[in-house]
Amino acid sequence: MSHITRRALAGLALALPALHGASAQPAIRTAKILIGFPPGGLTDSQARLLAQKLQGTYAQTVVVENRPGASGRLAMEAAKAADPDGSTMVFTPTDHVAIFPHLYGNTLRYDPFVDLKPVSMISLFHLGLSTGPKTPAKNLAEFIAWGRDQESIPFGNPGAGTLPHFLGIQFGKATGLKLTAVAYRGDGPAVQDCLGGQIPLTSNSMPAITPFISGSALKPLVTTAPRRVPGGENLPTMAEAGFPQLAYSGGACLMLPGRTPAPIVAALDQAVGRIVNSADSLTSLVRFGVVPDYQNSAAVTAWLRAEHAKWGPIVESSGFRPND
Image 1 (tube, rainbow, N blue to C red):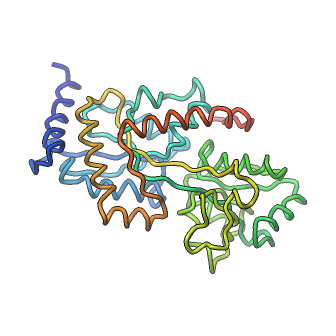
Image 2 (image 1 turned 30 degrees about the vertical axis):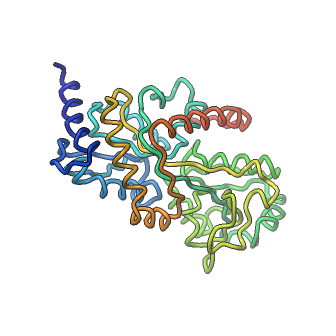
Image 3 (image 1 turned 45 degrees about the horizontal axis):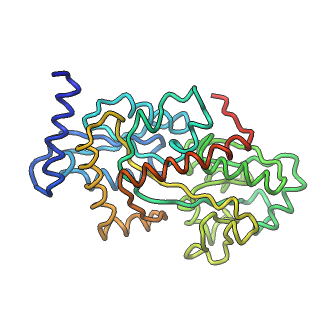
């Protein structure tokens, strides 16, 4: 019996009590959730919530391992290479599944539908554009008017090829503004540089900017959410601003190595479903600024395939090609 098979069966021993709600000691001693971004961001916060709730039921210990770099691809590659025994997961924005294959083509070192297995969708998130003290604009119309006189407008984003990056690209194309992408390692550094006046515009997930909707040097301009956000009733949606084609949203999902046995996938999926749908987790996710949206393995796989098909033409028309 191979080493991988023995470890997979150990994970299966875990799966059976989890499936039946038993309180047996978890067979996995230590499990880890990989994320491709630094600590403190939206992905990190949700991963740590999952780790806390899975500990003691799915595994004796569950830790979050931050592997920032390459716009989050390093974490995906590490998950691909991990033993398929249920002890290594990756928690990722859906950009890395829906967008990156079109962006990197044959240079992408993982196939998201072969090398990795979607387990559960956790949440949906929306995006927003913000300006800072470097511009006189107080709203979107004023920013567009100001921007038309600029030869180049750097805009921050949490990583090359991410959903916020493409929002900025497509916003520039829709308005005729000459936007130049500046990739950061996560939402936080981009927001801070916009707050500090180093860049005039940033494109981020809404949870990264909602704390600054009022009483801050950061001035949110527009959201991609389908309706105005609570506490930001003066913040228009993209549809209201005349750009319904830019009403982008993304998700966050948990994945396992692609060869993980189906019973382990099912056990983890059911555990995550119980977590996300519990009252305290729902409260925490809303506090993070995301929309709780548990989808099981079959549903999230179908959703990701549809998103993958949708983003092919968008990436092609953008003209963007990564340098790395």
